[in-house]
Image (cartoon, rainbow, N blue to C red; front, top):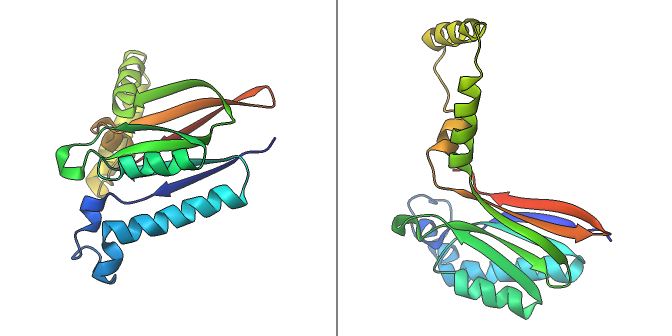
Length: 182
């Protein structure tokens, strides 16, 4: 059996309701119900035209969650989610929809920032005498080149989660994950 994995950032409604951010877009196209109808239509086409499609969603929100759950249930899909955000972003999160016919072995929800932080503490303990050369190089380069934002630092400072599900395809375990990088 083959599977297909697709991933969509569906934009939290509270962000879509900021027309000044999307000045090239007509306001009516940013309305939640208008967008949800388009999203629904697109996701339904993914499911109908492609067997065994797993759908990953980022920027899922508390506002849309009940509709998303009902939508996937009607299409015989199992929907898993984790909302990790705050009130200001409508408790943004991630979700994954899997055909009900697929065997699921495990589900994991990982706070990526916490995991990176714990790994970096372990690595710092393993540093040796030669690491001073790398640190000196970084120090010198930072004096001459404007530092870009570090995605690992950004990830460590957020509460975003990785939703990871293990499915079994042809008696082989496969892990599928979805994460929203800030």
